[in-house]
Length: 465
Image (cartoon, rainbow, N blue to C red; front, side, top):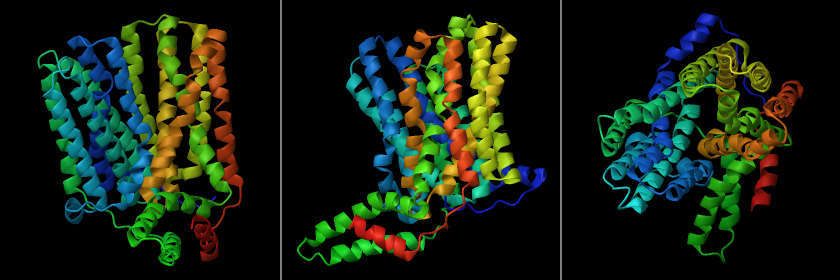
């Protein structure tokens, strides 16, 4: 793989001070802004629609809004390359896209608040889709800003703070909204949530735009494409310029990735796709398992909900400390091993039964290790992107990260019904082994040079042309 810059071993005090860096602190508020809209177009919205008397079949169709988050890679090239006319000049490319997305989210939430779900359900769906689109776009822009704003060694801390504030926002927009509706009606709740988007807007206005120089190999690749099209005089100029832009924005990010990493690019993508496969594939069966085991709803809510979130955040914070202390790849390997192994705690709990102490141990291990693994995975994926295509390449990674687990998770109920929970959790632990082996392979395989030579880029650019 391309060699990631080595991280000097730091003392614990130096590692801890990373969390006080201004850019890391900014993620506390940007993460809150990113997490707030999510529940408002899913669980919280379904609660509102249910209480309003909307038919269950109609409510079910609202789950399709979630597809927006899975296909954000389709418009990530636009966020990556297009400079917004007015906001772009005032704030810069990354901050302008973040602010525009936040305005879309706030506007969509206000629109939902001003709409009667019984009389105008279609408009609720349209405004919810606007919120989801703005939220997914904000995710793309925030990820690009985070990667470009600071060094690789701070990325784990950035992601840990982001995960913490994101989950706090989920609590505010989920449980907080359900409590709030007791003294404010549903439209009032959505107006309050729209106002809370001001947290992210203010952070964007107070933050600085990162200064990033495009790498020479990316510039060379796009110049080859443009020169080739310039010689195609039989093609109208408008068509030539449009095709050149599309190739530069959509094709070149992928060509660049495979150019820089060569054959190991496939291994890198396999790591991205398999790293969280254990956690994601077992997620759909977690709640049925707790209930079937015999735990009360109160115990599940308190231990897996509130306590579980705290352990996830703690794991992320520890991950952010370990990366500057020990380096990225050793912690990445540890995260893969722990994420797979902690599924065995669920198998043990299937034998022990509904014992509160066992649930606490299981949630402690699973959520702590999951938070650590997620923080270091985000940092590692961030280190792979080319600054010329930050948003597009990272959007590809974030989409690929969840896709295999979600697909396999669809069959989780079949496995449980065919066997039992004990064997199911052993199975999801075993499917995490490939990620461990792949990360180990990357650690011990000789590295390739960081940048492609002009000759390599020239060959690939001719293929693209």
